[in-house]
Image (cartoon, rainbow, N blue to C red; front, side, top):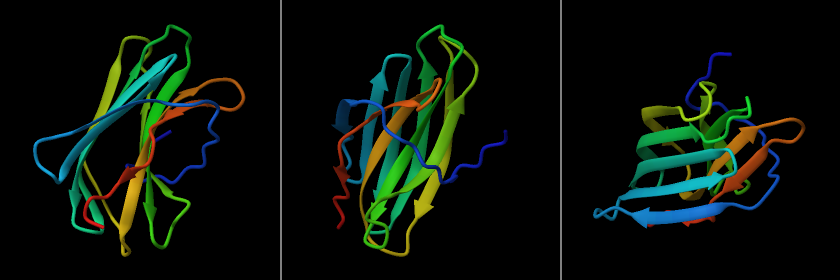
Length: 141
């Protein structure tokens, strides 16, 4: 399956998230991570005004030898899409101990981006097991 950086997906969350949030020295730059059994994922990005995320870089690591793929994505919330739009689906099919990174991505919205959540998932039997951050506010809106 060929992935595109801004694929929209529907994911059912199976559990709570582990959250680590840090802001870089610039008010526009941000990082966060989400992890749980079998998956660890990190993201960095820039808030660019009210309506853009730029320099998005997502890394997702498989942390368990269980033959399950892992993936991570960003859910972007805006005035027009208060339930969120899923972007930047990054999948890792390489196996335990391996990391996949996709960088240089961006997202532009015609309405104010109110915030995001970052989600890391294990593609296991039945409903995928996902771990997500809390809501991260856009400091420009």
